[in-house]
Image (cartoon, rainbow, N blue to C red; front, side, top):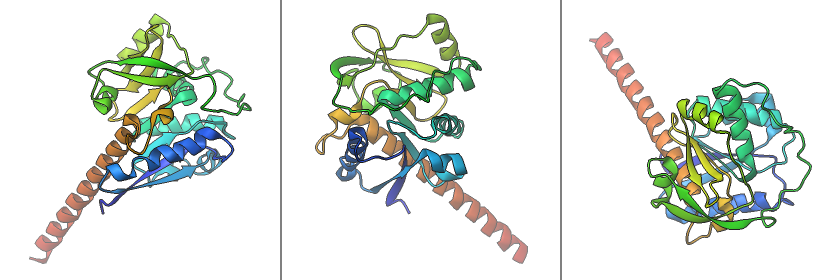
Amino acid sequence: MLKSVKIAIIGDYNFKIPSHLHTNAAFRHCENHFDFSINTFWVNSGDLKESLPNALSNYTGVYLANGPYKEPYTILKAIEHIREQNIPFLAVDKTYKFVLIDLFENVLGFSSVKPDVDKQNEKLNIQNLYEQKLIYFDEDCTIHDCYGRRTSYEYSGEKFQLDPNFAHELKEKGVNFCGSDDDQNLQAIEYSRNDFFVSAMFNPLVNSTEDMPHPLITGLISHAMEVKKKSLSIAEDQLDSSTTGYQHQMV
């Protein structure tokens, strides 16, 4: 029962988009580093629109791949569902914008902060516009636990700074700002009320290899397996309870 774990990769897969190919490769890099199989399945935004939340019910972890998406607003609904259900979740690179929208709208309650998520015609190429940056992690965060160290060189094409007033409100709601670069640009956040809800502005796919899979990818996989273990343990307890009750009735 614990020989495999299922991870959903949300995205409208296109083999012509390099970041999608690198996503598959990053998960393959992890295969020899666990004693169980890692089964990944792409779930496109159209399927999510038709059957959310059922489309994610068989997965114990979710990775949000880069766009473009046919149904961008469905992506936002999926993130809200994932966060509310405490499903291990990782969003990196361009996708952090969708996570921030969810946090602003559904955690803080702001309804007018949504950017134009419909403009997604550009081809997202992970080899363009990226520069290597030294990222600093807070010690008391999940991301630090994944790395096991305070710093890491990562490739990022994003610069983001948050209004201090918004930052204070988000912190009060459980959002940790746990990664930044030398210029104090925000590079990583997590929702601390969940076991693993992580978003990074940098791109871990670039640094992933077979010998050294990226810590954020392995972190997602590890937490997904923990969810599976917990669900199986609960199911076994319920079975034992029902069996005991039946035996008492027989007596």
